[in-house]
Length: 388
Image (cartoon, rainbow, N blue to C red; front, side):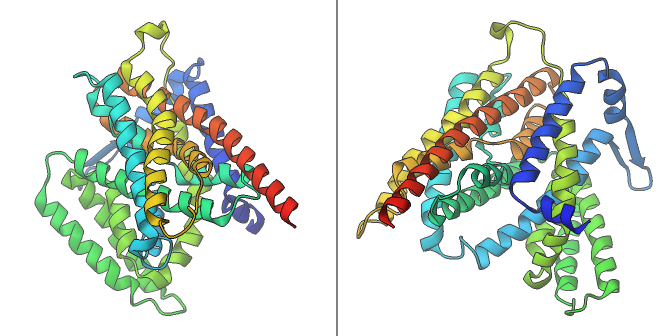
């Protein structure tokens, strides 16, 4: 059991598992199995006492995925206080590059799919899947200097922050301020409880935190804000001392079950039996904006950022290093799939094509990043060998 949990904490295996789950979902959606699985995903599970009524698919995207955002928020908190983003000097260069990696894909998307029916999908190509990107980096990047990995990690974390802001701001609806206020009170209580945990964890305090966390999730859901934001708020509120052990304990479950289940459900779409000319502009815009937009934006803005920060010496990263980071940044996947579901929730036809666009665009980015990263890593290994 411990070996399997350690495997699920690596960077390579969860990325492969995620890809397999998405591929399986897409395959089964286009076989005679579609009807049975669709019926399961569409079945409703209700909690009538509190008025929560969600389909299985929404329990996955709104419920299970909140746990993923919970551990993401704990990592964000650590990086902002003790890690790669804990000072302006550390954060400024990846922040500028991350801005480019958001602005350029949005611009490309709006140029290609800015019509009334598809314009709302502009946030979709802005996300980077940090687990997937680091998995590709781990597989192909042996020999790359630590500066490249640190830069990518900071870049992906900032992308996560931007994605979280988009989800919270753009996809809230019919806000119930009372429920939202009660949720914030719950978050404060959760944070206080987390600071009462001794070295030997109190089972009572942990039980109370779980109960409060579930209540906060329900209140955020009922407030009209997307329920995954509950995970973000709880993760940011948690005391740092218990946060990292909690993240460590949850990581195998998130990587081994929650994310693959979400990837399967999100990728469970029927490939439209139409000619390429009949596909939605959203599909083509995402396919181009994810890999190409990220590469152009991160390279261009990253080069400017590195030059500004390195006036008194040589740049820490070369343009080719930034190309590798940009190619990795184009792997949208988890958050992009969620954004596609949210952006086109009222138009299932466009939504399904947008999801296909995320899968195709991310796959292109995986291939491109594998080629660029392995080539760059080989160059660094040759350089190190020649100088030794």
